[in-house]
Length: 169
Image (spheres, rainbow, N blue to C red):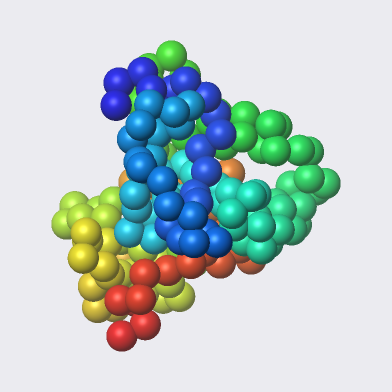
């Protein structure tokens, strides 16, 4: 994707089916369509819910943001805060940090020696292109966290993203 990834700060997670509308993807518009396993993975990549096609999810995001940080500062300020948290300044690459696995909120994603994992309760689930793996025990100690600290605060304040159906099996 090159520089396209850094052109603007509004990284949003839209629905695939909205009011029956159809359009061609990757047509050179002002955005680049990316497809994720589910919303938890999109959040880990630094996106937030769309306020247009995912209005209910966006309202829940705003409410959780307010619980985490105080009043809603407006979408441009939120996008700027998310961009600062997800991108290494001047490096054009994603920022990942280290944290104790036990401190991660539900729906955060971390990378451990054997893959990427979604946190849910005391368990972790492998993240794969086909869906989530069976529950395994959450590890002890530090892990590399893919979900940025701003989004983790929103998750900790109660935002629950839409999850791939393989998690409920």
